[in-house]
Length: 369
Image 1 (cartoon, helix red, strand yellow):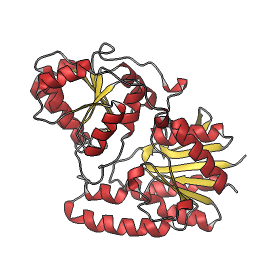
Image 2: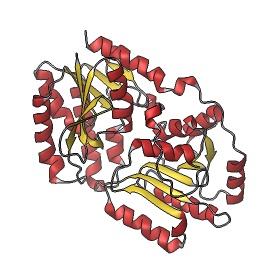
Image 3: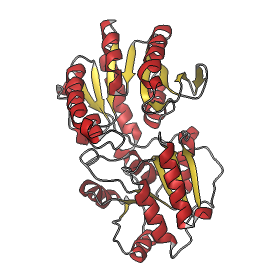
């Protein structure tokens, strides 16, 4: 049986894209699949037919990330060899180069435009972002040209690594909810009553805009709010808690996760039972044109999203009934009325992971030759 090994630095081993989409699909194709990723387990284990090879959770700028992780990853690739290695972060370019020299097939999965992301990443000093982004793009292009395939998670990336058409594939973050992805968990508030923020907790992903919206709406209607997601920053969690306390509405607030990962099954269950969600991202070139994963997730459960009115998203909404666009100066009563009257449409089949799964199967057939 051919083996595939996914390796990531930043993501948990049960990451939505890596585990629930790619790995599960690949096991259904008949591959034996391994994932090297952040996990609290002390030893390798098996989950739903996928082998998890854990590396400890870490701080974003920790010594583990720089030294310990590379050593452990290299040891895992020697102890659990595979024919195909699927790398999920540019920090693994060195490992990909070694694996190629050893005759392995290597795929690079571009979750985001990393060069653009660094340019607008607030956790890096502003003076160093541009040179890092420039060097990263040049290194990525040179490295990608040596690989068996590159996968883009977004069509808006438009082959940013400048590869010939036969060498890159589009595998979107469309929705994929199997029965085992729906796992009941205890809800802090009554089902159908709460506003929900899911995913990475960060300023640029709209956490404080979501809090501001909640306060606006809560001023005239009782509206519980749940944040369910992860951040590397304990300071950000503290700022959120202080914000809620100062607003005096903490009895209607719940934070799930914070500095610990939330199982994807819980995220799915929370979406299924929310009143509506938020996607109030800050708009910059790193996010313009992207269709965030949560768009597909909320559409799959016929839940409205309150989103930042970026042109590509407004067009997406016009075609697919995503939700309601909101700016901070929008009349709150009008916004609430729009949410009350919003009706979902049946999610188009082209937004199902099963469509992208066919692309994945074709990709594997090409590089397995």
